[in-house]
Image (cartoon, rainbow, N blue to C red):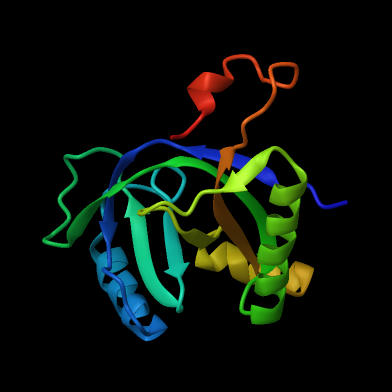
Length: 171
């Protein structure tokens, strides 16, 4: 059974690569930033690869606070909000597209809507370090890639409203 996870991200600052038409440009930025990053761990400050149509790429790393030295790299406002996520096989575009489609179907069948307002994108991230990823790939036969899609809660009639739902609603 397909059971996606709902994630809530807080609004924060993020260091960003800027939109790149080619994935290689993002990889070069990531390598340069990561080699000098002393700010945080992936647990307190995750990084994401964002993508939009027609497949431009943006790499961001959420910052734990606004006092981090970004060494001149671009800082953006990450809007946060609700995202639904599921696991796809890393380096497998067919499985990635199937996972995105499965998430969209799930969204349509539940009380959620896609939320692609400006500043909200599909995102992916490897959920382990490179060293752990290698071990997991050997154990599972594939790498894991978490796929995130921005959502908002649909308008519900009062009999179906969640407690404090108004606090969760993203305008």
